[in-house]
Length: 172
Image (spheres, one colour):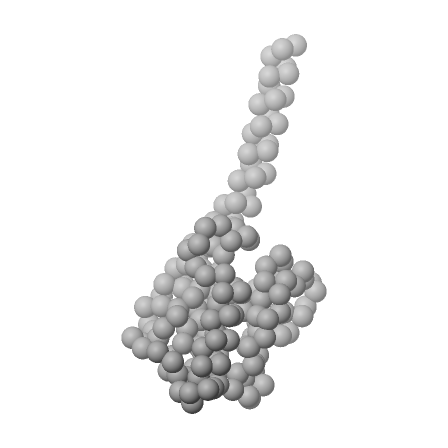
């Protein structure tokens, strides 16, 4: 009788480990793939690129969709080059530029259809728009302080924009 209970307990523990390890493994592989792509993008940036931050992004169509596989459309890096905020993803069609003085930088906050993470949006004078959040790593929630938070990046861009608008040029 005791051996049967021990065997059932062992089966339950193994089952729980398998159920937990599969999603963690998938998330780990996805994170390492994004990190590898991000490193390739960063290596191609020009030396005058500053404030480089890993991000996840959505176009308005993907952002507003209710049914989706993931909460973000693509990952990449956000950086500033001269008077331009640039967002570059791993695919050629994922490249956006926004003039620092004329772009609309808006805080969006948490959007439940995209997970429990915070977002801000960038909109250019030409109408192109993306939603951005800072890459949190393997986990959904920010653990540690490897990168600035989404709110910190938003506030920094907003402050840089105000300085650029007042001075007529990009602050150093």
